[in-house]
Image 1: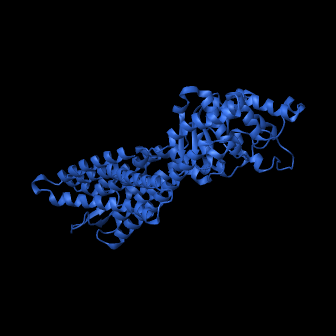
Image 2: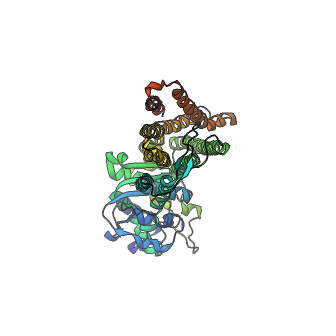
Length: 493
């Protein structure tokens, strides 16, 4: 939480105004360290749906009306820790993906299945197209499943109202009344203590923000040994990575369904889609590992004096030109009461906090398997459109071929190709601080090469398949090989 407009010292409160500056700082710091609320009404939460309404407008528009959306709560499911320096669109997209993504996938798949059934019943029209390269016959295809799946997915991703309770600074701390703002920030420790989980929207600016470091330290202090099991760190690059992969998959599947096989337009669309996605992947992953290296260097020599806070950047003067106390001094005193001294506090950040950050971010593959499946959802919906003409014509052998081919690409090859590409980028980035442009282009072209190799392997298996084995057998062989490749790729992460 970057309190660019929410300094805890913006206005004196109660008896604090009768004390001198040093005593005021001590009173505020001690109260913050006790992790108590000024009053029960300042223990607050808001539903994720409310916080994400209108593209999470509360994160970027900063309209004062949003502070009325909270409700009193003794328990918060997720405490959102983020830096206000992070581009808002990355945080908004990531939060929509995190909270609404699975529901959007389910809704899109149900809608796509409904279109699949309607196509089987011949309720929906189609267009004639060759089902495969080399075949002269034409079957009635359509883009009903993938089109509907994409539309419904987008609607649920943006508008689904998640009931999970969260704590967001701009909503849960009053922004229109200076005294209530002060009371809300003094109650920050209580809200952190009340939070079951902490969700960190991480980028390179997070560790440099004083309040962000304080929030994580407070969560570790209040939740004891189990704290690290309740911390989720989401690198903000995940959203653009997912979006690029999702759009690329959708473009290739739509081209597969609409452009005749062998047409140069199909080849061009597939190539450009893969190339654009590969360039975006390479840029994002290279930046991510550069930031991880910078984080490790930063944690090795951590100092509270090197962190940034808004009051210092404004020379401790508010918008009205009045002097305000220093957040850094308050937090330093607060953390001293927890750890004994500033040096002990900094040592704790360099050890305990650093361990948590390295465990969650470190050298491990930053994208879990379920997230890779999310990237390929248009593949599932597109294969429904590919399979429906087979089922409608009762070509069951061809139908099961299509199903196995989908399972191979969706569950094994696509995640494996992504994992191999990211592993290559990680290896290059680890060994060279500034890789040459040739190496970077090698990483960018890796995705295209792996896709072409997979298609070549598939064609070879089909060519070598004895006719008496049927057409389903080579699909099973291809699936088995892809499964082995996927396991090998996952061991590289």
